[in-house]
Amino acid sequence: MEHKTVVWEQLGERPVRQRLETGLEVVVLPKPGLKKTYATYATHYGSIDSHFRPPGAQAPVHVPDGIAHFLEHKMYEKPEGRDVFERFAELGAYTNAYTEYTTTTFLFSATSEVEECLKTLLTLVEEPYFTPENVEKEKGIIEQEIRMYWDMPGDRLRSNLMHALYHANPVRLDIAGTVDSIRTITPDDLYLCYETFYHPSNMVIFVAGDVDPAHIIDLIHAWEARRGLAAKAPIERIFPEEPPTVAQKRVEQVMPVALPLWLMGFKDTDTGLTGDALLRRELVMSLFWQMVLGPSSSLFHDLYEAGLINERFSSHYASSKTYGLSMLGGETPDPERLEAEVTPRLLTEPLRLPDLERIKKKELGEFVGLFENLEDLAYAFNAYYFRGVDLARVPELLDDITLEDLEEARQRHCREPQRAVSIVRPPRS
Picture 1 (tube, rainbow, N blue to C red):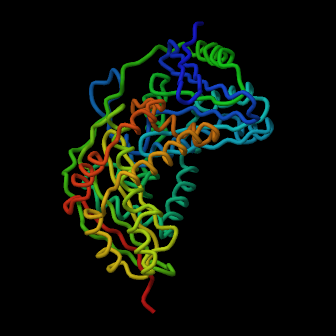
Picture 2: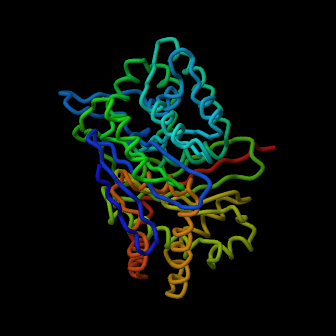
Picture 3: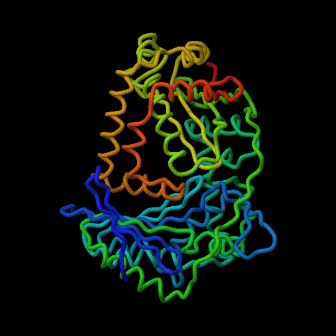
């Protein structure tokens, strides 16, 4: 079959893409000379996708929170006790999987036996096996994982902030769900979600390494042809309306920590973006936070010298089509003073052209460096792919961003009605 080669001239890369008859997109990035091959099989399905209408269905369905994460775990269990982890180990490969708000990804990393590893990855993702017995067993495992997160101060800090920022958007919920929600999951629920979201039309395979793209694509094409599946229409995802203001201004919790943990969040109201618009928004916000509160900024220096933060203090922006938010925080001996110092200066710190140009170069360097780290590259590719973003657009969009763009974003984003704070304090002695 004829394959499409895309030339990313600024990056010196030539990914090869092919959309199969099943709707599955396959992208292979040849990296001659690299010893390691990294492959992912990802679905546009994450923890926020609990209310949806499957293609061809009359009525929408609502499944338990945490089911996407639960399903990811169950994919590793196969009939007759076959152990996928053991098979990858026999091939000298590493495998893992993870679930996020909007995606679930299965992966392997290998230095040999790439073809067999790829077949094992295809088997892993394409052979669901759910029984009442193995589902009940998994509930106990997931429940232990959830309770473990309850005991992690950093996780509670972030989870509490998400509940404070959002009224109804499912991004406010923990990815693993709750003990009560996972207890209601049935094999029928899992098969429904698998058949809806693990259809090839909703998935992408990404392979990077010293491989022959045509051979890899032809192998996957022949494998997929045996399944006899046809492309499907997009899934209708249903989300509740979300007010622009935060649900709660402040959340505090007492846990065994040496120093208080402080996290401030700003809820973005500019949502619904995809493609270049979404990528540009992320780049603008990344540049803004590096300029205003990055390690080389005046504000970071002042807070550090005052003993209010340490070198692990950080700020970042994250978004998808249905949400966007900024988080900034870390350890501090005085949360109230830190908040009083930071909040007004976010709106008054000067934005200077030399700083912008310097940070643009740093951002571009880090982006180019992605292509030498296959794991980070695959993560970035999948995160952007399902949001309609072309990775190759980063250099051009980055170059076009101005100080005026950053100032406009600041004025729209760092507003009091969109701000919430989460604090974890140590017990009183």
